Image (tube, rainbow, N blue to C red; front, side, top):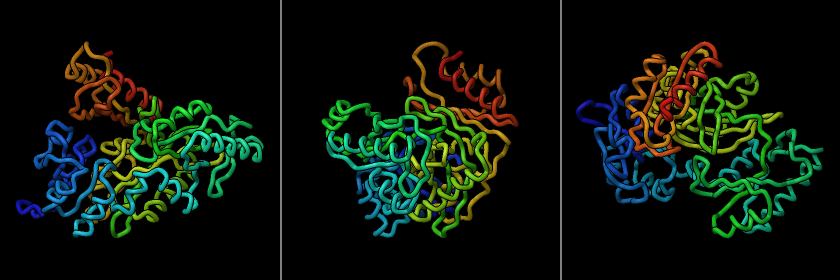
Length: 408
């Protein structure tokens, strides 16, 4: 408890942009957000008043950081589960707990647990050799032949229309731990590619290549009491493994499928004991939805909620970890689009000059910059636009993000 305000202190491990935006939400609630940052130049460390320097892999630093905090949470999922369990055993309220976050850290454990729960997942296998990967590709090919050229999901999922009938390649290989933003994911076209990847010594699972229509995300929050709140299902647009746009609500998504996605996310949150935000990244196929990944923290697919929902995901995350009642999740406008701002090539206008021009051209565009050094392809901010028509709102958001990236 902060003795100056009589309000809780939340500690957030990690000093990135998620902690920065959570800090902004904490200000409005009167709370004090303490940030554990690796350097004083990290995104959140530039704006938060209470910053401690340390690393998430140092248990002693985590213990010291937790002193005086009413609850501890994370802006990433890389804290060792052993450290999380140790802190919880010492009485620290830490969310999500080790028993939950392991399923966001370890893709093999995630796939095993989701399969046990009967959630729709792609065909997948743990592998340790190129021969294992080739055997899996043969299994996929056989399954497609059996289904009449369709790709099947495990856990009783319906057959999905296939584009690759009779052949199991390519398959998707994923690092069991450590992958994010397209890193740790490989599309393997043949045995030679599999041999090359296995030679790196990376622990892997492989999955069938799902014939998706598009990618969706279902974002929910859950409190220790068990209350949940679900946001509208959104469409996420990926380029080179990085999310570049989020469209809320997902255009053309049937009410039945949207409700199914929300219920799936709620069921997973309850089953895994998640406290805080849970983002369920989904593939939409002809026959339904398939779970791609899980994230247990505020998520890029929810940045639009700062202006576009009645309660932002960052405030909701704080409410959840403090066991407050959940906030309203409805849209603030019929159409909301967030576009990520990526670093562009060096030279040209300064970022400040680009802001001047953008605001003159589109006063309604809401800009969030993360205080990061600009590097080509790096996420340095996002832009959100609200309106009545998805097509025009999306065009404005994309144009604004491109202007901040390229200056034209």
